[in-house]
Image 1: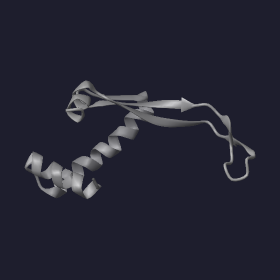
Image 2: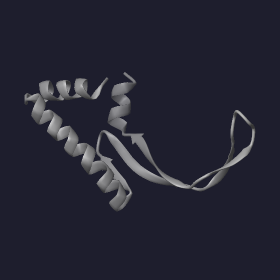
Image 3: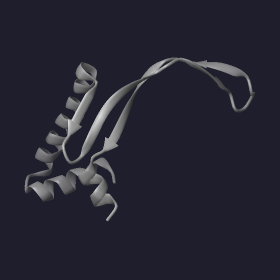
Image 4: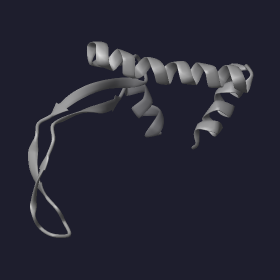
Length: 91
């Protein structure tokens, strides 16, 4: 599903215009990273939880040359589906 398709579905389900649905989706996209930077966790009851994890620096291998390379430490976002979402997907 593309972003445009998601906006169309949101507009139909909420009985609002596509412009209003797009604005709501953009607000959601803006709020999630802000909250993750602030507290490191965002839980949506029934949907799931977004959380930030810190990956340590490590060594890896270049698959083409086989040489050892250093992979820098970084923060990654993790999503864990809630019970309600998992139940709907597994029906």
